[in-house]
Length: 179
Image (cartoon, rainbow, N blue to C red):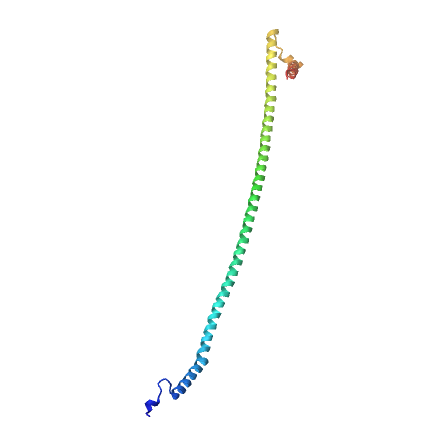
């Protein structure tokens, strides 16, 4: 039989099988010793980076939520403070308005009282002047009627003053009766 007839194309050559198995073993050894640990480190670093990124994102989210809550509290405090300041300003304005009204009333009362005092002083001056003029007119009229000067004697006796007092008491009694 010939050598070509003895070789079965379906069955591999045993020497090639041994060389293939040794090469496969060496390849597996190199992969397991050098490549897979590097790949494992890369995967672990990647997982750590992803998990760390998620953890950092969660921490930042918690920090942002805390800041948001703090902002809301500060905003609520600011609104409360603004309302308090507004109420105080309204109360102050009301107090100032009341003070100003009281001062205006006092000033008005003072002006009215000063006016009344001035009127009373003017009235008393006018009454004195009128009495003096009426007295002079009465003495002049009496002098014309009598024909001699009665001015010195009328002053000496106080006749004019008594006459004016009688007229004044008569007016006071008449004014009291008319009311």
